[in-house]
Image (cartoon, rainbow, N blue to C red; front, top):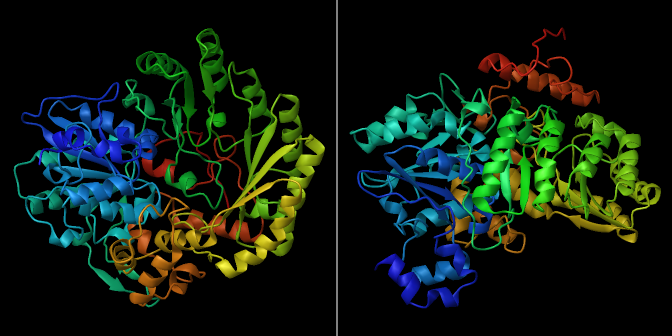
Length: 600
């Protein structure tokens, strides 16, 4: 059946929610003729409005379409009502640009942003009539490649993905196209990926069980990530596709820098995306004007992991401010850093929304903030809240984490007391306290720490409930966090659990709290006789499943940071202090600071 004809003549668009998710045709959509083109399908295994909000996804779409002989198209997972309709009428998962079944592409590139999307990924492949297990794919099936932060531990998905990549996609797009366009068999193409730096092809790395109980891929050399050296030399999309429906981030986006060196010891992104690489102020200003002109958005976001750390931010804002004010365009600065400087910057921005401010102390006590390397004192936190009130902010959201290494009940009580002090001393009427559960992430100093089980978390929640007397309190589902922790530190044995959860139990959209059902995962875990304590308890071995991937952070540095955490000692941001010798700048030649040798 013709997919486009089915969409517009069967009445299906009247039967499903948000039909604009499925019809394409947006403003700035990329159109090419199909003659002699390499067909690349870029898949974000979640809803349209989630994937279209992801800047990296649009960067990759633009990057691959910059090749004349390539046509890259978008693929998203439909919502459950549309999946039912597609199954009923034998309609496979298709691309939005040309309504092509995904099985007909040469390559499917999948973005792995979070572990709880793994069941979505499997459902997407099956809905597209592509064999879910990589071993079952034949010559006519597309090569499935996956990248993104969750690919830094590829092992739970190793039996479903043909090729993994870690690093910056712009750095390897040419290699990918060269391999895919080569006139050789599918097997030979996989071999070429295996021989190219930055790519991990699981089939060439047999797995064996180590003494600890982990299934470990055997390797001679680790697979190194590949990173863009100069962000100003790579393309950034100014003709961003404008969705027909409201998305999570409905605005123009400019990436001002990549990476963060603040060194919060729990933060995977802070280590995975190192080192910091900035665009010039001139480039950011030029991209901003062009993107606003080509999209018509009335809001722009200067995006990075910590935008307020951008070294020339005031110059950018000074240049843009009159234009934004004149055209009634607001600006947002998402950031992991909020201090007095940040509030002052925010106060100067024309059109900046002052309805709410987000602030992440992460821990209530100074001792625990030092353990996790959150370089903030209580005095600074209180003063920032006071200054925010004076500057016009009326609401504040506070983000904390429980279950952190070294945490005691006194540390949990300190969250309550800190939130109370902020409300009282800053005289803020509207405070929301959001609490997540610490998840030990690969390639961080806390990668071997234990995950606190739900029973213990519930005891901590009893303490936190005191917050409800003076503020709103939101706490993440501890069982959802448990599954995320299992997938985060899993090995290849966990692959069958994901498969059974998806297809025998019907788990899908697990990252949506209202859709998550722990019982489905529990049954899949029990069926496969998985000892979850292997993955969730404190780990006492250096032979870890994810060490096949080298994100360029040295093992010496991770152990040094782990030791400093035990001693509650902090490490300064190396952009403004001495080099911490994490290894990334040395291995890449990217000296974003003056390299200094440090004696330990």
